[in-house]
Amino acid sequence: MDQGFIEGSRVRGQRGFTIIELMIVVVVLAVLAVVVIPQFFTQASKVKSKSEVAAVFAEISIKEEQYKVDNGVYSNIAECPTTTTTTGVSMSSCMSDADWVAVRMNPAMEILRCKYQVWADGGVAPAGFVFTAPATTSYYFAVATCDGDGDSSTNATFFMSSINSQIQAQNEGS
Image (cartoon, rainbow, N blue to C red; front, side):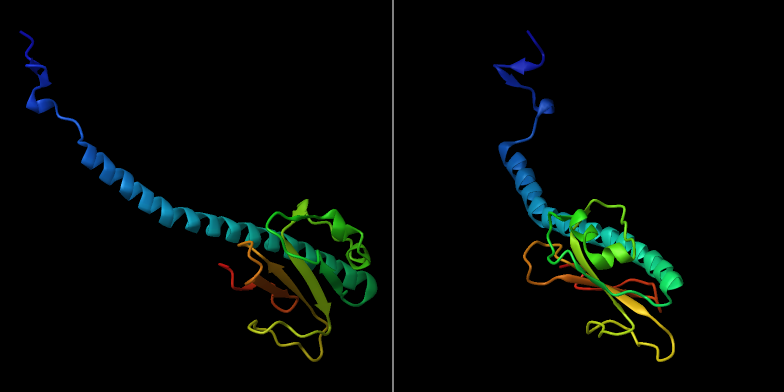
């Protein structure tokens, strides 16, 4: 007689998981997925915005300094693109703008998810950012607005100036 079977059932030492134990594991995994997945997408949007803004702000810094060497002043750069989008707008839409052409902007990315604007020697910095316009030195500051969550209600805003190139952020997790 086979030692592993007694009247068609397994011997006690070879037990598997019960259906209740499996259901508990499935419920725990479902709860974790509900909590973790939205956080993952929020972080992914945040990283996309920050990396794009860092690259475009670096390009703005270089081009503004070159423009000042050539023309003696910094340049205002009109807002482009005019809207924020999570899917992005082709960079070519900004490349036909006279301000972007004048400073020879050429960001490495093809798609912009944020909108950008630069004020030179004037303008008011958005509330909440640390910036004091110098009285005797020429300056510029750049602002990027990004809709990372796709709802258009609360946008992340980024700020950088020629006085302090460190990027400041507000509503970054939105």
